[in-house]
Length: 248
Ligand code: TMP
Image 1 (cartoon, protein in one colour):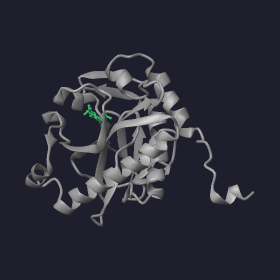
Image 2 (tube, protein in one colour; image 1 turned 180 degrees about the vertical axis):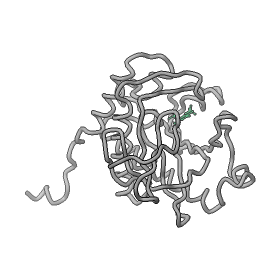
Image 3 (cartoon, protein in one colour; image 1 turned 135 degrees about the vertical axis):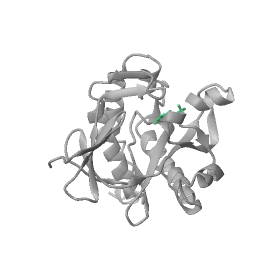
Image 4 (cartoon, helix red, strand yellow; image 1 turned 45 degrees about the vertical axis):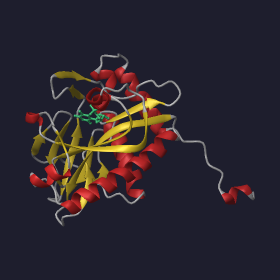
C-alpha cells in the first residue's frame, strides 16, 4: 500500500496519510529516546519488533473485547490504523514498583502491589508529562468523566489480559503506558503502541530486564533483549489440557 503525505513525526514513529481518509499508516523507526528526549540513540531492528509486537498484542486485546486502532499490518515497519484523535493522557498501570514510582515515593524496585496502581500523566513534552488526577483532567477538558471511567476500566482489563499472556511466556509484566484516542463516532479506542518501549518486562525466573530500561540505564544487550522478548511472544505456551482432550 502506498503511503500518502507524512502528517507527523514523533520520537519513535512517523504517521502518514492512507488512501482511506478514516485510516492512517504508522511507520516504526529504530530511534530511541529517554528522559523526555535528552538521551538519544538507535536500537537496530527495534521498529520491526515493536510493529510486530504491538500488532500481536492489539489483536489479542481485540479478542478480549478491547477496541483498538489496529486494522492491518502492511509492512515489516508499517501498520494501517484507524484515525483517532489522541487524548493527551498517558495512562500508566503498575503491578510492581519500578522507575518513576520507586523514585517518587522512595521505595525500592520490585515490590509487588496487591492491586494494580493506575496513574495519569498529561501528555505534554514541553511540561515533562506532569502527573495529574481525574479532576485535573476534567479541569483541563482533556476528557469527559465518562471517558475517564472507560479509559480506567479498559486499562485495568488490558493489564489482566497482558499479565496473563506474558505469564504463560515466563515474563512478568511490571508496568506499562497506554494512550487512547477518539474515533469519528466519539468511541474510545486503544491507540499508540504496546512494545518493549512502553512496558517493563522482566524474566520471571531471573528478573532480567527485557525492555527499554536496558537502553535508558545503559545496561547493554539492548538489541538482544528486544529479540529475546519477541521470541518469547511468538513462543507457543504449554497447551492447557481442555476437558475434551482429557477424554481422548
Ligand atoms: P516510569 O516508571 O518511568 O514512569 O514508566 C512507567 C512505564 O511507562 C514504563 O513501562 C515505561 C513507560 N513509559 C513510556 O512508555 N513512555 C514514557 O515517556 C515514560 C516516561 C514511560
